Image (tube, rainbow, N blue to C red; front, side, top):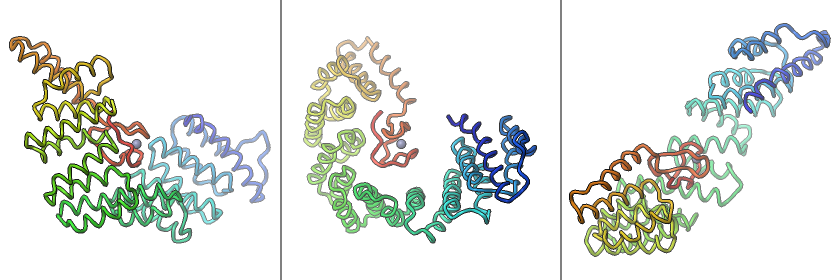
Length: 383
Ligand SMILES: [Zn+2]
């Protein structure tokens, strides 16, 4: 599709070129005579020599609405092909033109800011979008872009300021701002400013009372205050809200709750959640917790049933094969078939990303609250 658009661009250029000539009252180009420079420019584009094509197109003195739109499209195409320097060259040229209409100048500035963002030049992108907001204070694309820039820079207060003009959807605003408050609470928790953490979490709860992340942080705060029972209630509420969090939390839970009784409580909770949801993604953390709670024998029938009847995750396959290898060796220490298989599955699993963004499909090894590719919150799930 992109390549087709690329090949259609010369036609758009020609149309803009000829109408510009009319506007500037230059002698019209006879229908059978196409300007030589234009032909050279198109040839360069078709021969994959876009820089030479740009030398010609960007030195053409006349520009009208059609030509400006074509330049914008050309720059955006360059950016989407990953050719950000060329996109920057086109959009900087457009912004420098004094003869652009207000709408086209705004579009060109926005495109220029997006080029800087794509190039990772966040300070330049920030100044372009801030410049736009000086004349158009509620221009949504600029607010949205600045919000993303401040998220990347982890400037959560500024991101929060932009959230209200980046969308009119109050639920979306509340979701973003609750995450920003959680980010701030995490930093404050590390610094042990526990009262400030509580303040942030209260605000986040008011904005998004169903947020599993907020519940996890209430649990973390309770642990810091040595209120382990209360913390467990928060963690359990978070997992009931978002069962996928059990895997992410399992290591931490096993560290906090280390006595045999506490681990038995954890095991019963994980077992109930698995049986209630029948979610194959919960099998892996359930096996891990069962092993730590010395419930390997109790869980083995359930694991065999899950292997026979469900589609287990790679991580569940690793843990299930390790558990079965242990059982096999208890019966006959000299037989190592399952142990060999378990080792091979584990080596295979280290290569596979365990998490995937539901929105854009980007895969990653670690759980993140925000997808690094499409910048959406709460879209990362177990793969
Ligand atoms: Zn994504």
